[in-house]
Length: 578
Image 1 (cartoon, rainbow, N blue to C red):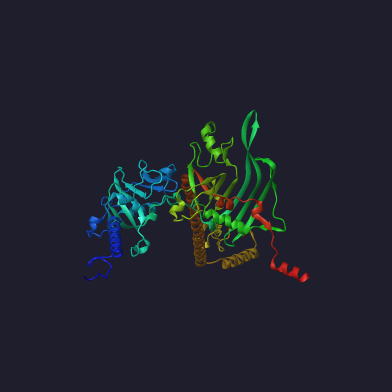
Image 2: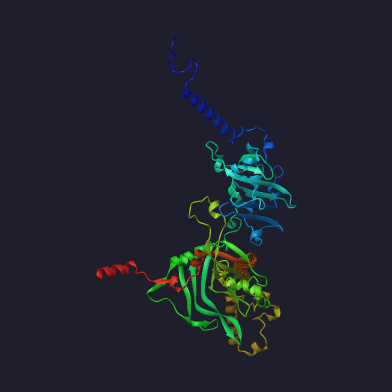
């Protein structure tokens, strides 16, 4: 009988081979199963462009009457709503007590992102994939701590409240070969309330929830080079007991007035007043100037001027009613404990006169157009901007949380005509003196008045013949010296021409003076109009600015005056002496 030398049954597989085959089959099945359950893109379905528009109802940005953005912070498990609405024809921010949203262009740009927004692909139709693509709707009632994959909800409504667009924006598509053109990004999105997940090209930076992206950040709207004067009035407020009642008193410290010449780019100190310690508002100050070894710190003053042109708002709060635009309190205001408390908490107190002063003094800025800004700084505070680090793409440990030191500020504007350059009016040129024509030429005198040498009168008859002859000769000589009628007419024409030339020159000066005066009057009207417009913005609000900007504007003598630096000539003399 033949022996099987292969070690197994003829035609079979050894145990090792069988085990390998089993492992390979199991691996293949696992790979197939993983491929089956993995979220993946479906081939793009080619549809007409009109059918790929997500919000066909939103065809015109002018129809948008409100924009709401809901953003969820997974780390803090907090939902941050942001809304801008049109109220009375004006866009306002309800989250900030209806502060005006001046960035109308930004709003239009945000709405435009959703107009004709077209899908590129349908990436999933399964609700189970919403977390994968980050398009879970941020719903207060449904969100639970620890949930992930929550997107940003953008909602636009028209004036009647009808929803024109509701979009949940999810994660960015970062797969190779899927970059968007023109710096835009590809995002996974879905229409709120629907299951399909799409891939679109969209600029999500337009849907910011930062307060300062939606307002006019430039508070004063001034040009630094137009600054002409700065008055720094440093004082404190103290509560003084009188007759069993507390009243607020202003205690003076120092007041500096400076002028800036933009042509020479030079600061000058026009006055510097100091007050004795604890001086009241009506105490007489002591005037002084710079010492021989002192000079103005021009760099600090230039920083002040530039900070005024770049003074930005980081937050606002609405003032209590009863305060006028010129920072005066109505008589009934001081009896309103809630209103007074609102001021005190922010570092402002009303005097008996009704004027509202601040605990940190004031800075008055005069402009060349006659507008004066009065800036009164109050108490310090902090401003936190939720989600700033996430919005900026900064998710590293220790990233900036958006909390900044800040300062309350009251602002008002007033008009000061002394800031305007007065018109240079010329004196009117005098007119030539008119010569009185007391005598007329003999040719124009009546015959009765003409002397007739051949018919002497009674007096002449009594004269001797010699005298008569002398008189006749003298009369003939005088008649020879008199101008003729033609010469008189010529002189009259020349005088008339000179008079007309003088009158025209006078009229030219009058017209030029009138033009200069009208231009000056127009400047007054424009300055007063600007003051009204500015106070229309300032009247209702406490402003909050960063502490850094406050420190550039709120200067004292130590920052305004510095030790004089030796010039090159003095330095050379000192070196030679050594």
